[in-house]
Amino acid sequence: MKQAIIIFVRRPQLGKVKTRLAATLGEPRALEIYKELLQHTHDIVLDVAADKFIFYTEAAEENALWSGKDFIKKIQPSGDLGHKMKTAFAEVFASGDERAVINGSDCCQVSGEILNAECEKQTLN
Image 1 (cartoon, helix red, strand yellow):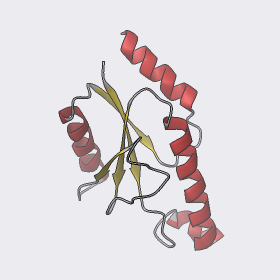
Image 2 (cartoon, rainbow, N blue to C red; image 1 turned 90 degrees about the horizontal axis):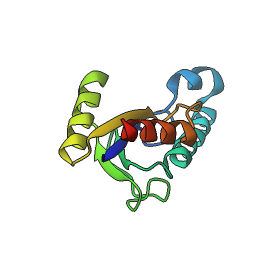
Image 3 (tube, rainbow, N blue to C red; image 1 turned 120 degrees about the vertical axis):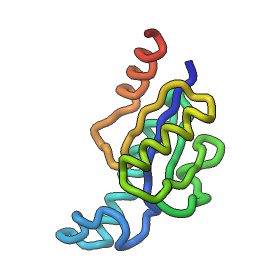
Image 4 (cartoon, rainbow, N blue to C red; image 1 turned 60 degrees about the horizontal axis):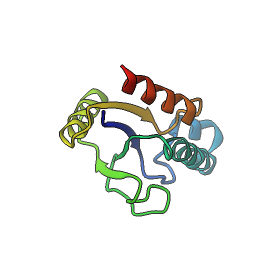
């Protein structure tokens, strides 16, 4: 069964990410933390047996982290988070995936093992 992981990200720009952290730690440190979280997210999903969709809040970036070879890049629609998630699921299912999960770009407790186990469990059912 074809499956996908959807990741919502922001472009890592000073003053645009982790704004609540920036209020106490400062914008440069908040940006640094966000970049570390993006790297962690990248690393844990890279080897998961699923199509990998990156949904940017703005224009997609061409960079080494989210390479076009491993990740399908999309743009989030306008609207609230529920609408964005519903639209992302619809796009992924329209592309042929039958199951999908959304993983935040800053979920540092999620591991590749957890994601792979969920994918395997879903495939076996």
